[in-house]
Amino acid sequence: MDLNQSYSGSLNDLEVWNDTRFIRGSYPFFINNGKVLLDIQPGFQRIEFRHRNWTEQLPMPTDAYIIDINLLAIGQLTNKWSYVAQATPAIKSGLEEKMAGEDFAIEGAFLATRQAGERISYGFGLGYSTNFGAPIPIPLLQFDYSASLWEGGPAWRGNILLPSSIEAWVIPFKRLEVGLQLRSIGDRHHITEVGTVAINRPYSDYFDTVLGPSVILYLTPWMSLNVESGFSLYRQMQVTDGRDELISFEPEQAGFLRWQLTIGGQSPLRE
Image (tube, rainbow, N blue to C red; front, top):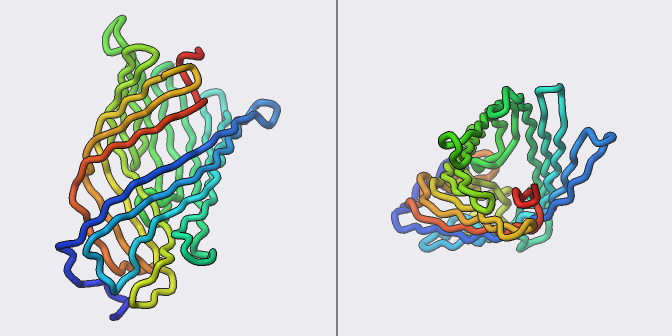
């Protein structure tokens, strides 16, 4: 098999699905005489892949383990301009074998935001991310707007961060937020289980574009529950050697359900 060319076998019977579980902590504190908020967020994530009728010629996407530290710095540039800087070193691997250089990765972003009024803010920046599978530089555009649905009515807000997400939220009362989200979610990790063909640096690249409702329920001032559901609009998965695509397919559209329990964090019940 020529590894410089894409795999050309039949993918008609191939099925792939996954189950993701994660935990993340957060330790925010001020530095530089209170001018910069630094937030250290260690995280652990397991992405469990399941597949049927996978070709034996190529490495199978192994279960991915992602151990990272998300470093966020938030501060003011001027009276109207603020910034968010992010750096995320990580280990992304199947962990079946000893660690290698391909298991390590780093991503980052910088976003500058201008407050144009009480209700509107916009910004731009640049990220280096695996949000669409392979790590690439991504220009960022941001727009946020908040208002009341009608005079004296419940609040709502819209949040846009292109090219990754578009969200709209209604806040009927303090304990509840109801939203609709369009998001792209993806990643890359090093495959450590080999097939019948030797590949020096096999990677699994994947991303999913999803649309659906979301609910945030603030149970207490220090605890919230977020439930998301909806439909996958477009899904793609690839096995590559870090440069060339070896196999690529688009799994069928499917529904999804995610839930997240947060202890701590921001809450309108503490205002």
